[in-house]
Every structure is written in structure tokens, then in C-alpha cells.
Length: 327
Image 1: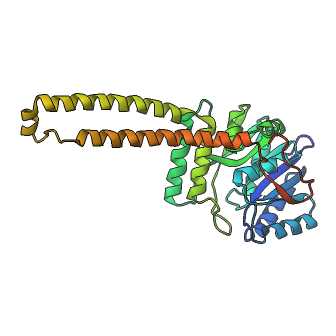
Image 2 (image 1 turned 120 degrees about the horizontal axis):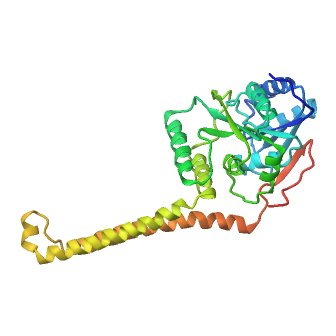
């Protein structure tokens, strides 16, 4: 590891949700890794409305070492909100984001700090191998490649929230007011000097995964709809194709009437009411798809215009509870 060139403070953000089984190992490994950095550090753990013993363990760790800061939400606000809250309360010159499940090994963080010291504003992790089920692997692979085709900036493939960001990037993220946040997308959108580090993603150290298919689907929708209007464009193009197919169907229906005997001889004679039923069902289905796409965008606009706080802090250890002023 390269020595830190000048005094810096590193902040680490760790979102936690029902992580009582893995926290003791996280405390040990994260502390050992941070002590190697030879620099001032703080670790902010955000309890995202856990209902197990997570909060008590975080409080005990804060009592042992005040550099471990704990924040507790009044309820579960979601992983991306927990990450955003942690980032908002950091004071370091650079901020690391890492999950509590130890699938992202803390022992690798010195590599990220070294790259940041070289002058990179964002250093993100690129997952080389996943330990998830094959369905999840395919879903992640497809999502990143689909989204990269739908946005007008470079989105690193196979990268998650595991990263280090310079303070200027953190300040920009904190100034962004949107409620439905896709942090890795916002991070990439800022631009600046970025690079990736390849690592092998480990299996969860303990406990069960908190990202089920429903949450992953929500995260994917937030990512696509927050940065792209391509779904609206697809709806428009699909509408044109539907109109063309409907016009061709009208011509076919007319030819069946004019050349009735020919079409009957090939087993394609006119069926009373059949064309009308097919047209209604087809157009009705397309309209519902369009309404669903519009509804997704309108729902997010509705969330934003209410201007409710992004999160509510119930308790904290080591930091004054405050809510984002830009929410």
C-alpha cells in the first residue's frame, strides 16, 4: 500500500438493515482495515429501520470507539436513501460507500484510497465474479447493458455502490434534491475523473440478503426512469407501428371482402367480427402499456413535488440528528 501523501480524513458509509449476524465480523474487519490507512477516519452506519438487534450493536460499537457513528431511521426508507443519508453526514475529504454484508471486502479499500490519491475523483469497484444465483447474475448483466444504451453519459458496467468519492463529488450529490435516488447513476452522471478497480465479490458473510427481486426491480426502474426518457420514445414508436399494423389490417379486411372466394380457398376467409375483436384487444393492450409508462414517470414526479424529507432520523450516536435541508 502506498503511504498517504498528506493528512486526510476518510469517511466510510455503511447502510445496515437487520444485520445483527454480520455486524461483529464487520466491526473487526472494518476496524483492522481502517487502521492500515494511517489517516484520520470515521465510519457512519445507517440503521435503515431494522427490527432485530442491529441498533443496539451499533450503539455498543460507538461506546467502544466514537469513530463509529450510528444513525437510526424511524422506519425503513430503503438502501439508496440510507446511503444518501450517510453521505450527507460525512465530514471526510473522501467518502467510501460499502455494504454491511462483507460481500465487498474492506481489505480491498486501501487500493481505492491509493487511486484517489493519484488524482481520481471517483474510484468504483467492478465486480469480476458474483456469488449470487444464475438468475440474479443474468439480471444484473442485462440491466447494466440495457441502461448504458438508454442514457447519454457513461455508466460503468458491473459496478455497484462500492466506491470512494472525493469531497467535491459528495457535495454535488448532497445538493441534488431528487427523492428516488440511484446513487451509482448520480455518481457517474457528475463526470469528473473516474476509474474502476476489478475485485472478486464474496459471498455474504452472515445473515440473509435484503435485496429480493421486488427491491431489485424497483432499483432498476429508479435507475432507468431517473436518467432516461427512452421508454417514452419507445411508446411513441410503438404507437406508430400499431397505427401501421392497423392500417394494413384494414386493407387485408377489405381484400377479404373483395376476393372472398380466393381467401376462402386458402382457408383464410373473413370471420364476422374477428378483425374488430383483435383490433380492440391489440389497441387496448398497447394503450395500457403507454399508460403504465406514463404512470411510472408521473408517480415519481408526484413523489418529488410533495417535498417530504428523504428520511427521518429517530436516534443517533456521535452526530447531531438533522434532516436534509434540500428535501
